[in-house]
Amino acid sequence: MISKLAKLRSPSTVLERQMQLVILTGASGSGKTAIAEAIASERPPLAKVLHFDRIGVPPLEERSALWGTEEAWQRAMTFGWMGRISRMAELSRPVLFEGQMRLAFLEDGMSSVGIMGARIILVDCDDATRVHRLITERHQPDLANPKMMNWAAYLRREAQEANCEVLDTTGVSLQSSVAQVRRYLEE
Image (cartoon, rainbow, N blue to C red; front, side, top):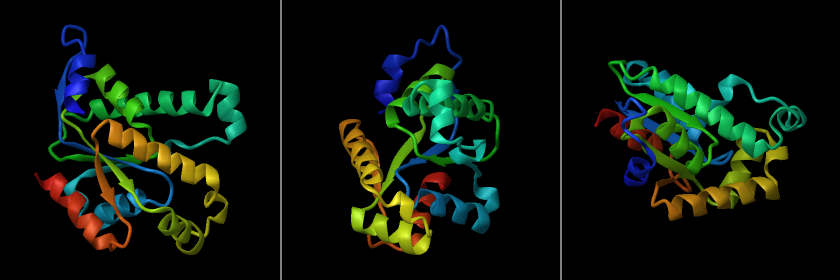
């Protein structure tokens, strides 16, 4: 994925920023937010933890009215986040960013602000695990629907095509997943 980013960027027009950035993306119920929150609460000095949804996610009707499509809204917000994150390049600790973002939007957003060397990880799980987490653990049965399963499948295909790292949380304890991401942050 990094080589693809290098081809997209023009060094003469973008200030390149090398920073320790780990990005967790994935559909609802994959475990990305739980991992990020555990790291933030258990080891606050380890990383600056940022959550995509903290910007506020307006209702679908509002996103469509302002941006035309949900996809256009997600792309614009991803670019906005990459701009904010690029200004954190001087931090003395890594940045951990999590949210539901297409890998292509992440790549383009990082390229637009010169972020180099980020580790992008798709946090994923099988559909049965996702449904269980959304209904039983998160009490959000409205998200356990075919649209969410299709979104997860789309991200899975996108990750495979981009040769992106995948952290499969199916049947894995939260602590094991947290330990894996912590290792990335400590590299």
